[in-house]
Length: 84
Image (cartoon, rainbow, N blue to C red):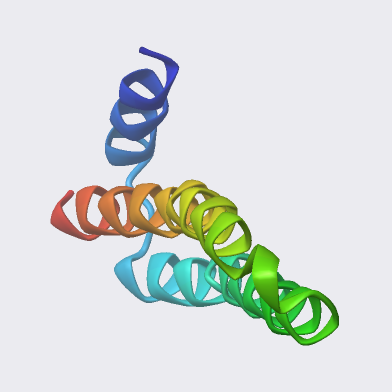
């Protein structure tokens, strides 16, 4: 519910679309680094204990999805800001 209110506030604020694109680009750095760290940990864990690969991949993909949701929320807010 709060995301909808935030998106509506962004649209009504009249944000410059160019600034919104720069903001989204900067905001996408965090999830990009997070995904890299997640899969680096899986590679290290699999190298140390190969029999745990299945469990590590399950955990990695669930955390990958949670991390990518942040980037998707950002791009939705960007499109709402550039529309207004």
